[in-house]
Length: 193
Image 1 (cartoon, helix red, strand yellow):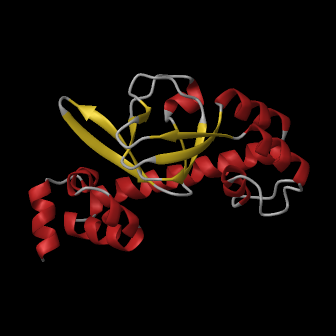
Image 2 (cartoon, helix red, strand yellow):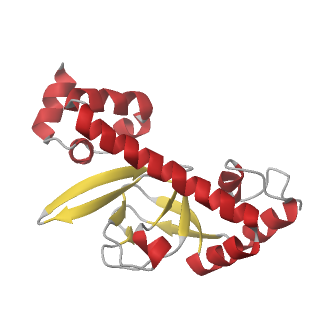
């Protein structure tokens, strides 16, 4: 089977969205992809764990959160086709500060970090694409920080409706409020308007 055919894994297809990969490199990358299923309520990564794998959500909804005392602060959501890694664990072998939880039954494709690092070392194209994916994640976090500093809660909610309607449809109001940095009561008032 040639990897130029659409039968490559979702993981490799996602990589190809960020740049060209020769067929033989795509085939090798494809051979390293594994699949794992997780039930709703289970964790992919828990705070304090070192998980260096790189993932793509094949099916389901996830959220990443930090703990602040007893409070959980949602920092991002992910759903089908989203690539993600375990924060500092993936890049510097440090314990994760975040926990990533399945909000629905989920299926993930992933490559263990050591194997991904080997591909980065072996193929410049893979290394460049990996860097582009990290840059996109950094851009997303910069935009999120900018929104928190410059937009009202109502503006952030409206942006979420426009930019990420899947989150509005699939996540609980409590998680959405936490993500927006507001109370659930404030979110309810905004929604009524």
